[in-house]
Amino acid sequence: MITHGTSADSSQTNNQQQLRLSSQEQRAIIKRLRHEVLLQYRPVLQQGAGPIRVMARMVAELGKRCRDLHLDEEIITSEIVDRTIGDVDLRRVIECEGEPGGPGDYRMLADELGIALPGEHLNGYTASGEVYRWLRDQMLHYERLLLQHNIDLRIYDIVGTGNPLLRDWLAADWQEQWGLTVKGDQVYLSLGAMDGIDKTLRGFRQMCDEQGIKERAVLFPAPGFGVPEAQARAYGYRLHRVSTRPEHRFKLTAEELEQALQEAPDIRLIYLTVTNNPTTFAFTPQELRALHAVVRRQREAGRQVFFLADLAYVGTGRPEDDRARMATFAEPAHLEQTIFVSSFSKTLSLTGDRFGWVTIGDARLAPALAPGWSNSMASLPAEWQLRFMAYLQLLRDRPYLSEKLRNLYRLRRRRFIAQLQQLDQELRLFDQIYLDDDATVYNWSKLRTGEDAFSLFEKTGIAGVPGSGFGYTDEYVRFSVGVIPVPVETLLEN
Image: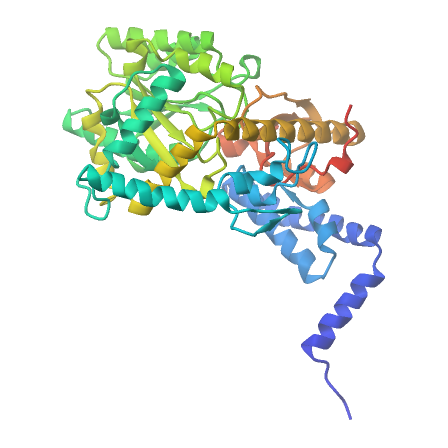
């Protein structure tokens, strides 16, 4: 009589096979699979597919193959490290410097920011849920407050730019934080920075149509965040790309901007990341003043040009440096030529909450951009606006939270750079491992001749994003230091 094995029997056999494999043998299998998956995906990238998505798909596929072989999860995660995603998952923070529960216990951040559920266990720390509950109490309080002001978030918002009380708060905070004087009428809420950019481009396009401006382009420095380029293309803008240079730390110079504006008279918007993704470098006050001067001269000559300033990472670095950069916008002429896009997604690691806003420096321009909001959504979600207000109050009450997050980012950047330096000593992979301007959640580095993001992944198991994902060359690679901590036991720190 012949008997057929069940799926349980098969699983048990696979597990027994795993137990028979040593750690060294399992790592050898993963290295072989890394090579095989690279052969599969490299042609996909060469065919022009989006590098970020290709790398993410490749890492996911490799992880699935390893798990199908029932390899040890701890070994899998040490041999396949996905550093393509920039966001910090506060639930996965394991770093604790000093005493548990002290200021260096970063595991507490999920609880302190109201993300962790009451009683949730997070890497050896049990969340109290105090802030989680407090945020909900504040939401109730603010809904009552809004109703007292005859603002009912449960009905249709005709303009769609958000409740005026929250917008006034954001304007007041800008005055206090940066010394920039704007009114709440110049602040429009958005579902994160990307949504704010999209709505701004939509509204600006309609304004151009109404003014009979048929030729319109957006200047995009490279390397740079690619999503706004796709958004601009969708709204019919021509894209004008300027490749920045390493000797300028990959930042647009005043000379390059002036030349681009002369060559392309249809440029209406200049996309400017004040603190850059992917390069991690930030403009100095002197560099920003030089750029302001170029645009001011254009406007004095009668040409309508605006900066679209992405501030997504302003707040991840040293506060005094951020204040100095933002102070360059305080001069009325500079303020009026800038549209700012802000978000809590990166600065507070509240990516899923999508708290963003657009600040329009020229009060006369603001009404012209409003159709970008009213024509894209009927109304901003009521619960979202209330939660936004609660978080703004949390930051006012507990400003140390921003400092603690900056310290976590700094710790992770330092450890990751140390890890890259160790790998380079062993494998000779990098031409230059760039040190950042103490901001963002990334590392941007140049590879040696003959290396690219694929070969680096094959040799180290660390997946980054090729420079072509940001409009640059594949000599460069961007890593996220965000989602995954660097295991401190792997480092030989000084």
